[in-house]
Image (cartoon, rainbow, N blue to C red; front, side, top):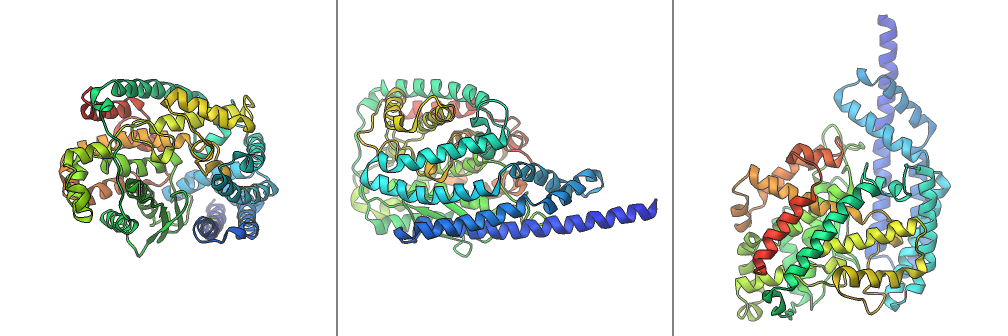
Amino acid sequence: MDVKMRMMDKKDNASLDYIYNQQKELSVFGGIGALLGWDQMTYMPKNGASDRSEHGALISKLSHERVVSDEFWNHIQNLSSNIDDLEEKDKHVVKRLEKDVGKSRKIPSDYVTRMVKTTTVSYQKWEESREKNDFSVFSPHLKKIVELEKEYCGYIDIPGPRYNSLLDGYEEGMTVDKLNKEFHFLKKNLIELLENIKNSSTYQNQINPKIRFPINIQKELTQGIIEKMSLSGDRSRIDVSTHPFTTSLGYDDVRITTSYKEDSPLFSFFSTIHEAGHALYELGMPQDEYKNTVISDSPSLGMHESQSRFWENMVARSTHFWKYYYPLFQQKMPDYFKNTSFDEWYAIVNRVQPSLIRVEADELTYCLHVILRFEIETDLMEDRISVDELPQIWNTKMEEMLGVTPTNDKEGVLQDMHWSGGSIGYFPTYAIGSIYSAQLFNQLTKDNPDTLNQISQGDFSSIIQWLDKNIHKIGCRLPADDIVKQCCGEGLNSNVYISYLKDKYYQLYDV
């Protein structure tokens, strides 16, 4: 018996060594792929897309082949069969690997190569399509992506609509049925809130503010806020891209981007805060015993989005935040602010005005933009609509939900880069993250009643510590909804989000 146990232990140890070595190398592959993607969206010459598609495809292929190799899978299965004999740390890693690798093994390597090549070229065509303001330039490439996504759904084959298989890749366990119920409630209440606000005299008398900040001032403000959020320059950097994003190249190398517009200075400020929220989450991932393992990651994109929306909206759009930042803005732009009081500025920051562009949408209407995309994506995947119909369908839904209609493709169907990268199923995570962010902030202020006072003093240290303990350091040892349940006492709850919006905006608009 003792000899058999020793042999089993030796075999298990060999398997543990193997899976941890593989995960470390896969982490390196991921960093290389992230670097290629970051370069493509920031500094790569336009004509480099063809070669870059080959670079990205090779890295993705090599990484995928390692993930789905029989040797890796056999070691995982060996450990899984003896799961009760493993230490707690190893149990978490093996269970997560078995689920993730089992799913990846359903995907052929040639599919991964085809998808990467297609999306790399597609992204360039999306940029060209936006520049020319012509959806027809991008549509043939989007058609290829939609067909590839349907092919992917066939491999994963989660019961129900095809879209379930796409959703699961971003928000594990989420289904169309669950989202339909959640989004039905959200859509109904958001439209009702919007209509009540539109009927208020405050809304009807609000003026479209004309704000212009020089780009150099915007850069000073964005640099200042990321330093205030403790985003160290030794571990991160900020650059410019068409669409702001965050990517992690390693535990001490996270890149964020923003975009500067002279006549829309708040865009760069809030998009930087948004991306900095993502970056803090990445930099806060478990680095002790879980470093370079599948546990040192976010459990879902909704959870990741909760971190960026938390900082962008719960913190940076609050009256307490502007008690600290309003004087700093006054110093930077004295000519503008000599005629703009604190209350007027706070109203501008939180101004409700249905807009055409999602990333420029106000806090109240933002999730309607997300629900629109969810409805379109589910219809696309179920063949209820075609790619060629998208511009018209998009415009119709914008009018129905938000009362505004795009006049061209650039401000309509071409505004987001996500579809060009094959990220169909991603958009719902923005709404899920928005809901989670309200729940997390609500719990934070209960756990630390001095939070609002600290924000008004420009002190975010206790917030970062709270998020680090309750969200960041958990990694994906638990599913996203379970992390929220553990922290807040309940999972996804749109009621909390709607209550937050109603309390804030009814007061602002005297409803």
